[in-house]
Amino acid sequence: MTSLSVKFFYPSWSNGNRTTRLQLHATPAQTVALPPAAGADRLEPRVEEKDGYFVLKEKFRGGINPQEKIKIEKEPMGLFMENGIEELAKLPFEEIEKSKLTKDDIDVRLKWLGLFHRRKHHYGRFMMRLKLPNGITTSAQTRYLASVIRKYGKDGCADVTTRQNWQIRGVVLPDVPEILKGLDEVGLTSVQSGMDNVRNAVGNPLAGIDPHEIVDTRPYNNLLSQFITSNSQGNPAFTNLPRKWNVCVIGSHDLYEHPHINDLAYMPATKNGSFGFNLLVGGFFSAKRCAEAIPLDAWVPSDDVVSSCKAILETFRDLGARGNRQKCRMMWLIDELGIEGFREEVVKRMPRQELERASFEDLVQKQWERRDYLGVHPQKQEGYSFVGLHIPVGRLQADEMDELARLAEEYGSGELRLTVEQNIIIPNIENSKIEELLKEPLLKDRFSPEPSILVKTLVACTGNQFCGQAIIETKARALKVTHEVERLVSVTRPVRMHWTGCPNTCAQVQVADIGFMGCMTRKDGKVVEGADVFLGGRIGSDSHLGEVYKKAVPCDDLVPLVVDILVEKFGAVHREREEGEE
Image 1 (tube, rainbow, N blue to C red):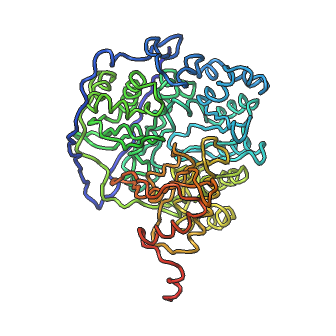
Image 2: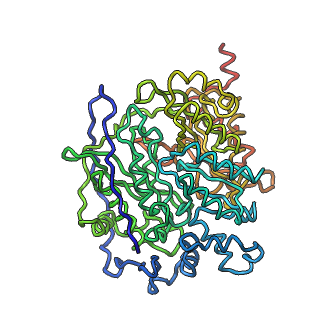
Image 3: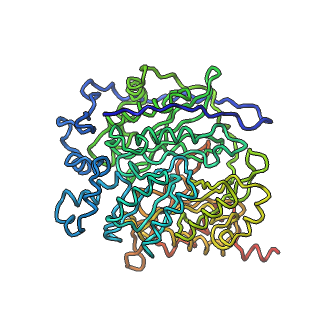
């Protein structure tokens, strides 16, 4: 198997605020009960390299989950690396459905190429997820994606995801080989973006333009993505993980990247005068359990970002569980080995089998007030600003994408930045052009830089319009409920409301001030769509996960409940009372 060699470019770093002394923060040691030391048998890697791919060893195949069996029956990456997609795309769907092998191809293995068959609601059509390190996209890329979805009419649209990424919808299988070629021509890829792979590498959406940034996260995330996908050619070393895996690099005091919900988060810190990162590990969401990332008690210099990621991924790949699918995320392995045992395994896989202990010189200022990036804001480059645009629940049509591409070219540098809140930033705008940009019809009619206070922080997953796992419709309902609530109460500060269609919580309801998780419930003796309501999630340095406030609320009853929550918990005022006081 060929290996990938990458040269690391050192980004600049600073504390970003000359008027404030750098604050150093030590993470207090935690006293926890450690599990017994794992025996030698448990620490034997469960996978082996065979014919260029990593496969599960025969001795570890007892009790594995169905997805693991599908990987053993046929290597998913072969559809990409051996041009299997070319032959599959030529087959009529009726022919594909006759064989379990090819049926598993379209329903499971194609996810390794970022293709998700929408069998339940849009049979024969696919969602395609891309790789977009740090959420940076170009006008040319945006136009190309618009051209793809336009041909699918009402079935074609695009979403900004909660991992700073593009997803396009309506794709049909015969078009996939040509779409993959087109993606490559504009510098995009969809490889290794689904199933048991590393998800999009997240960074500061203001990287390189933020007057207060700690470090420019773009070079790190580009290198991580290049390494993990072998420069978009496919990297079999990391395509057979036990489950999906998330990574982010923190570049701002605002923690826009949400480190506490990633499997690996790089937290900027200095040590002995050198810049590097403390490591957090294990954060994840799932239907059965959600956990915040915990310190690995490790610091790596900036040029060890890729090698430390590699060591942690190999530890997870080699030792992670492959039985109960709900217990296969990396935190379950950390629980089993203990954080120190897990750390020891990571050390074994580092280039020199060395890993420094965590630094006390954390560069993230803990009392920082998180900034709003929507609207007009000055960049670190004198005479330039960026404009954050609100994309309602992250949904775009082809014409809107074309128009965004035009605006980015005409007013900026032809670049767009996607955010984890499903919004878009246009950077590098000369201040003399700001006034004209704000007059553009798209900003007046659709993607406002100054949305209403509750709508501006609204996040919603795909919902059952397209996703077969979603229990309820989310995007349209999220907007409808929020608009109705805004007519009833007035709030003085943003309240982050997230909607997710099922317990897989793609919209991350546990980090929201108010979260809605789809379920079915009963009202007046009838089964209706409902939601479990979560409260108390926080982001930033004092992050923690929210908890269930009320279960199985019929969706038709959510407006009065949300009104009550906003009044009781967030200081909202009924508009009738507000008008009476005037």
